[in-house]
Length: 216
Image (cartoon, rainbow, N blue to C red; front, top):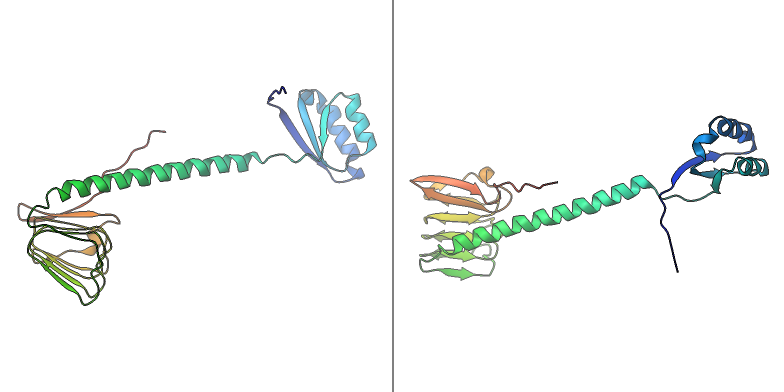
């Protein structure tokens, strides 16, 4: 089997009925040199008179041919590209978060406690050292900690921390106290945030504050 692929210029027109014959023929009489190298796609009614006219003019044509919507193809391609870029962005953001988690986890050395269970409503944890919590803190739960704190899931309860740093998600329902200072939840970004005590000053830095630039 052999095949060839062609790039064909197409002109599409619609004929509603026999009343359009004269207008169709008049148009192509005036412009038929422009259509010698084009495929004319006619949608609708094509009378024997029009077919005979096209043959006499040696114009290539097709009747009621369904053409692909080039705009739809472009939109589909753009959607695919946008989804690919969104996936790459999400992966890059996740890599930044994991890198920051590893960096701060290496600093958790003061009698480290690691938990992978939900801190439920009414439960209170009192930790003398550092804590890495791989789950959420429900509303009505409390964590009091003297060391550093990393929580990777949603916080809706009460947090009191006296370590050098905390790492938390955006937590609009949480009550967060860091070194006896109330942390304004509006300062916490959507993803993980690093809250540090630097030179006796509380500094909040979103993990994804660094922009990811794409080269088109």
